[in-house]
Image (cartoon, rainbow, N blue to C red; front, side, top):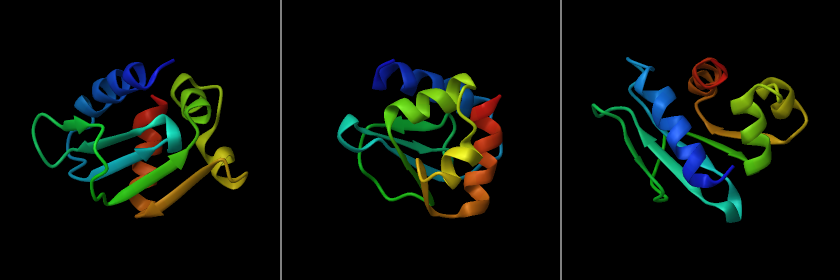
Length: 100
């Protein structure tokens, strides 16, 4: 799964996350960045490295697992495969949105 495919999946899930009102960055290291601004309607999604309320840092493979349900984000976090920078509360909300 490519960065563009994951971007489309995130776009679809964030469109259903009404009321989130936050800026989130998914940092996949050398594989790229996805920045989501849900303070706008519709949410603005880009590959620019902008400031965010919460940044989730992981490999593209780990994130693919989270998106398709084969990787529990809580376990990934405890094992150090997923790092959270910023609001942990917002990260928990994202957990619920991304797992659906």
